[in-house]
Structure formats: structure tokens, C-alpha cells
Figure 1 (cartoon, one colour):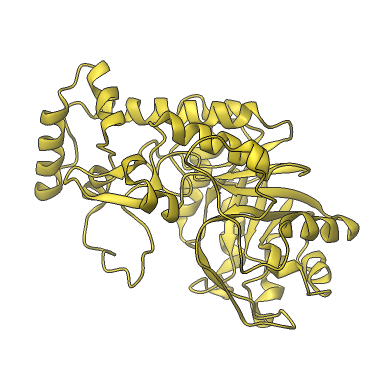
Figure 2 (cartoon, rainbow, N blue to C red):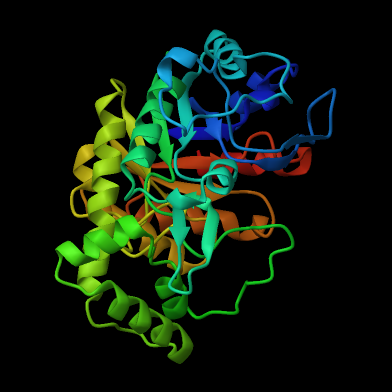
Length: 357
């Protein structure tokens, strides 16, 4: 099965979009329904070249009756309709596609900035405003309501950021790339907010001592840490609670963006021991055209769930290397491809989507 990712603005106003998606071999379009801020190119759209979504938004009507807490989504004033997902989905279904609601849960810089008390905090006391911490009950409640509202009328759901984000994030003029080793990045991605500290405490850890150890591990580039199993268990417990609340409000097949590395954070959080059993399928990052991506696919396939390889034809992907890349991914257990991204790819790269058919 081939799933193609797109934004509502890729579809609306471009009558040629469905034909291009068919030409790419797509059967299901994962259409952004709740998405983070982005500045997106629209190289093939007849009326525009760029869309700047200034903040995370719900591309469905924001029903006041559905929201009771202080965490609630914003509407996208850069769109001309309050239900751009619904209108784009109608266009796609009329063209023969199934539509999956692509929902980003805990990645929301607007909410993390307005309500910093529920954002992820590292061991140096520095907040990551783009990352809402699932250890807070109100974050889990927000995510569950967001998923229910964003998925209304969809044929399926694609859940992104269903867990905790960490250090790695593309901020304005990012200047952190390569500064920290994988080990240091792991420790800087451990959330140290009050809710997480309470979780450590229930597992027998002293929060002050943990924070001190984390700081030392970052500075000394230490691979292991006393109590790391309890730290991971705390994160996984909140992730499991988040996912359970979200899935309780959904009645369609769910594909989970995930990573087999249990310590992974970000758009594809690390799988917990029970995560794969709770969903219909997994989609795992496979953009690098190196054997590492095949290892990621193999790790996810070991769960026994169908696995979509999240692949891209956009730079820096080397067109000449894509056929071998796809063969490795299929041999490692990929049962389908999730194409990134139907609306971002220029005309010269559109034919490359057929490599994954």
C-alpha cells in the first residue's frame, strides 16, 4: 500500500493534484488535520508558491463545546475556510482515494510558549516550548480531544508525536546540529518537569540526584546512567497513558509514527512495550538512503505489525540510490511506503515516487 502525505492547501485550488497522486501510485492520502507551524513550498500549485502556517492549527472547525481546559487548538487564518481538511478530503474521496487524518499531538510551540509549565524541561532547567510533556494529565486530555476532533469523518488516522519530543528540533536558524553526541542528546531529551519528577519518585529515584547525574552525563558524554531504566519507564508510562486516551476516542484504523529505539523522542517516539499491539500499523522514519534505515524498519517489523517506511524523494535523497534503498527496506520488512511529500516535491521529482510502487 502506498500512502502519500499532503496538506489541505496542496489539494484545494489545484485540480491537477489528484492526477499527480494517482500517478505516484497512491491509494491513501494522509492529509494534515492537526499540524504544527510550517513554511511550506507549493511548487506545483497554480496560484501560489509558498504557505506560511505561523502556528500549530486544527484544520477542522474548532467547536467551543468540545474544549474545556486551557489547552485548545487555534484556527488557521491563512486558510479561507474553517474546514479545509473536510473540503480537501471530499475532493480526494471523489477522486478515489481513502483519506487518513494526519494528526500531530504534542508538538505545539504556541501552546508550549503560552503555557510553559506543561512543556518539556531539560536537566539544566531549559524549556522546550515546542514540546508538550505527556506526563501532565491536561496534555493527555488535550491530545485525546484533539485527535477525536481532527479525525471526524476520516477513513483512518496517522498519529505523529504521540509521545514526548526531546532536544532535536528545527528552530529558527538552528545552531545545535552536531553539537551533542547521541548519548548527550538522549540525556538532554529526558524531561525533568515536576510531573516527570513525581514519576521518578514513585520509582524510587531522588529527583535532585537524577538531575545532577543527567547534567554530569551531558558534560562527560556518558553512555549509561544509574537509574536510566526508571527514567525510561516514567516516559513510557506517560506515553502509554497518552496513547490510550487518544485511541479511546477513535473508531478507525490507526497508524502510529514510531521508532524501535525505546529512547527515541520527536515526531516518531520510541516504541513502548505495548505500543505496537495497540495500533493497526507502524510508520517509521526511513529518509536516509543508508543501511541504517533498513535497520530501523527491521526493528519495527520485529513487533509483528505491518510497517510503512516513511520515505522521501526530496533532497538530500539521491534519485539514483532510491531503487536500492527501497529494495533494502522491503527486504527488511517494510509492507508499504509512506511518501513525503506529495505537495512539496517539484515536477522533476514527482516521477521518483513510482520507485516505491
